[in-house]
Length: 107
Image (cartoon, rainbow, N blue to C red):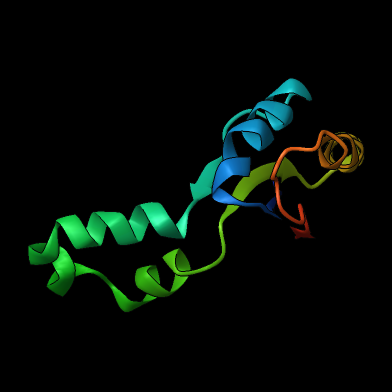
């Protein structure tokens, strides 16, 4: 990744939508993603109360964000083509009838 510019693309979904969304992005060749699920993080804190003093406020704020999937796409022509495929893929996913949420994108 050194020397290359990358775009972080956040795709907003529901907790139930994480798995189908991740499968869809893998299907178009985007490898690796960061899952941000507020419910999982809050559950972790609830079950590990002794760790609360060690949670950075910035991390806590980020993890309280709505459930989303972050993927990383190169900021070049190939990345723009991949981003175009992503938009098409998300439109198809919206039409499956699954509870995937808005699938809004933030770059």
